[in-house]
Image (cartoon, rainbow over all chains, first blue to last red):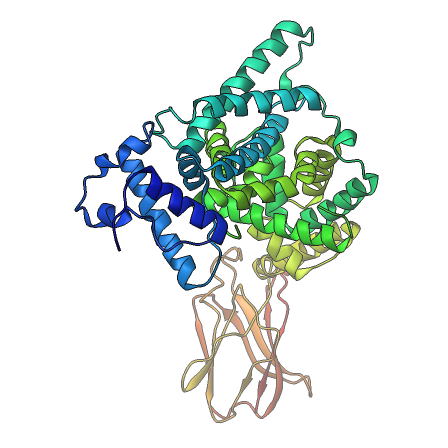
Amino acid sequence: MLTMRGPVCWSVWATSVVYTGRAVSIPWIDSVNDGSEDISKQMWLFPGLKASLFAELTRAANHRIIAATFSNQPVVFTMNELVLKAIAGDTEAEKEVFEELLTTFRFLVRRRLRWVSHEDSEDIAQDACRTVFEKYRSIDFSEGFAQWSYGVLRMKIGNALKKHRRDSKDSRAIEDIPLALGAENPNPGFKIALEKCFRVLLKSHARYARILNLSYQGYDTADICSRMGVTAQNCYSTLNRARSHLMSCLQEAGGAV
Amino acid sequence: MSQCVNTELGEMLHAYETGVLSEHDSEAFEVHLIECRYCRNEVLRFETASTMIRHDPTFRDIADSIESSKPEPKSFFKSILSFLWPNTPLIFKPAIGFLLILLLAYPAYLGVMVQTGSISVESIGPGERVMTLSAYRSISVPSFAADESVRIDLSASYQYIEYDGRPLIIRIVSVETEKEVFRSDDWQLSQELRIPANSLDPGKYSLELEDPKGEIEFNPREFRVK
């Protein structure tokens, strides 16, 4: 294959991938793979990206793209690959990156700050997303995009917590503030179905019940495993098996999970 | 995306949802959520349920009540007992225990009986029959062939009986005819009693030991000559 270079090369490749759903290869990947070309010559395209990470990403993507081409499957890009494309000027990839990021951030804010209102949590998630958007083109991704953007979100959550503690007269610990469950789940039948399934599940999965109870008492994985004499792997497997049963039960009960 | 991009972190899915993970692992999983569409979709799909399980007191109460209602793990001894007497009503258990004590204590009780004066005919030697007084007694009637000599050895196990140095009377009586076929009035505990072959006709006999002063009573012991 001809080794093409420069932004034109990347744009052509990215556009072909976006519109056709597949590609044969990342144009400069051959030189990366066989080491015949110095990778740093291509790095001017991505000023914030470390050479090693860039090489790793492009190599992995290339392998997957080739595999997808041969199996006639649409290529699905990872978050890091989408970010690379977005940095290179692919607006569709950029849109996809930030839609996914915002969805994740919303969830994480809801989980971390259960006591804030829907509007406030949306503000925090959007604020974090905006910061990522403003900086992601020039940032040093030494730890990867996900790690860095998570750091941004954590900082925003930390600020919100500080603000809450400063403004609020509520002296309770964050974990003790009750969650308005009814607002999240407008279907009252769901809780009944979940209770029923949960009860059945715990009766048949004693180990799951034990793990949950220890968790409710404040023990983390290491403590639970040492108390139960199991490995962390076994603990995770038990939990995931129980989760599958719970999902099946809820689906059988006719409740959307 | 139909698969998790990092199975090592993906395995922590429900542990994260239920809050089992440590803070460090939680953060690692949250970073993973940014990268992995599969896990993100799973977490979002189960969000309402997992939030309820994690924070709603109703679910905590359910988990607590179900776990505390389970029986304590049984010890080995308790498992054996429950295997032997499954589903025994509690009220009968003391009675069963008392019965067990009686059964276990019976041999000791028999030993006490021997010490207060009873006879048993026990061991059988090659070529000749040996009867001994013993702390252990056989319930079955020992039998001997008529063509064998019968040795009655009363010294083996009876030396601990308090007889105050008195000679004992030993008798062998036919049970059917009540005829005394053997008698020794001055038999000592250290003495060996040998009955010649063919001196006893086939039939059932009773071996009796008597204290001349009647201070100790010995229960008679039967044996059969074929």
